[in-house]
Image 1 (cartoon, rainbow, N blue to C red):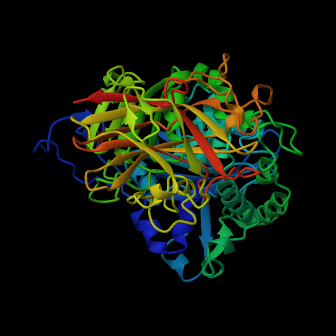
Image 2: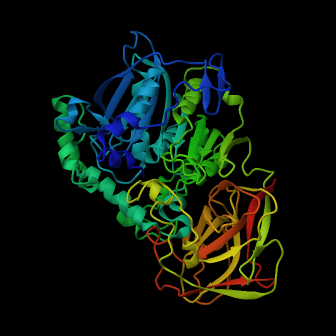
Image 3: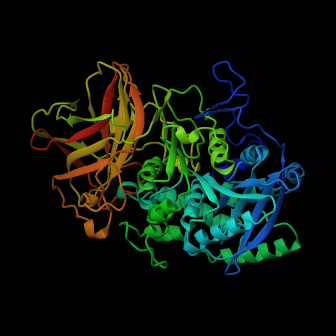
Length: 632
């Protein structure tokens, strides 16, 4: 679900080639520039770049059913004859590389798309081979896509690994990685339980397709679905017009495998791709987790990572999960993946959006991701693929960033025990207090122009249709469209780390609705800073006794059999979590929770539309928010 590199390329060729990825050059810690150092973000003395540049070739790999997988091979330039190196594998649905037109092809051809060239250069310079393959039915590979993450696609990964470890340059060890869709294929590869796959680093990947991407909180995210569907369909048809008028002048399209045979097969592959299944059309008919997609006859569970978690766990392959606090709802993949796969040995969570592409902390001096993600990946791959004992296995499992404090922290657990869940009650005077006040009902006239904005976490998943990098500006004016409950100024510094949880009594004047909640930091001057959010469709309010997978909060199944249709004006109890975060509020600031009935531009609106929400307060209807809080 990650198209940003294609998009950015069409604006500036050289920024994609030269500037993609995160850099950390000549990093010095504590004034030392010698000796060995290894901890998150720092890696000195264990390895140095051995090679400069890479050599490239492409070929087709023949699968068991004769499907041909287009594969790009990048080896360290001047790799010594007979020397064997580990391999990093990327399996992409978004084109492994592009063929560009004259005169740009005089400077660089082909152009990498979903994997930044800087990343390939980084790993090959440190003695790794890199393989990027178009998954079946995409790019220059043959075949027809019947679904995303199909059993056939997963099984192809095993055969690709078989081919890799039989090459004379291979040391027999393979690591998988990638971002978004490619991060998800990296983890799905483990379902094959191939003994040669020794390490996996999924970045911004999707553990639960229904709840994290398609229908967060049971609410359809149609703008994203449309954007992703339109992008992938056009890529399948070799049509780049959606990326701007310049596209046809810059690009031939997907990069054919080298040689005359490759060009002929590519033409045939494009014809086959026109028969690919349109998953987005099917998703628009989905309400419940177990709804089957028309024409497919399967639900999204058939291609969701959590459905393969036991196979993934049984692979025994160590997993390092990387993501950001502002990455759509995908940061939940980090913690649910951690809780449900024992082979998740490391988790890294930064103040980032999808990718990561930007530092989204409102307190950061720059949007640049200033943590060396590639270097951190190298530490992990060096340990498991090169047997370099750099101590990464002895570190705390979780490394996370606290926004506001602007500090990295470590833990071996999630949820973090020192963060005690503290209740704050909603009151009819719009306050938020630790004690319950008098009974009453608060009314809210739903404003359907309410929105989290077009630079929100939801836009970051595709990087399309944005007005700049992921960013949340002062929400003071936006809050006027919402109903808010606010604490008195804090007497001490407070840290919220974990998943806030809402337990509210609510009604609406229509038979269906969506509820959006925003946790905010209100400064003494009235500035309102976004912390995190949650969303929920009341028909899914039943708490499931049988969880599909382990979670740290009460579980909603979103299954059809568990649905409880909402009756107009019925006061019901809604319990739902907000997206996990780590955020510090300063002394004198206030905590606010605001509610809306819409997030315009991101989520669907129910029919009929409710005009009014009612929130119950007091001992009769003790609506509250539970915050994982510590006071300093």
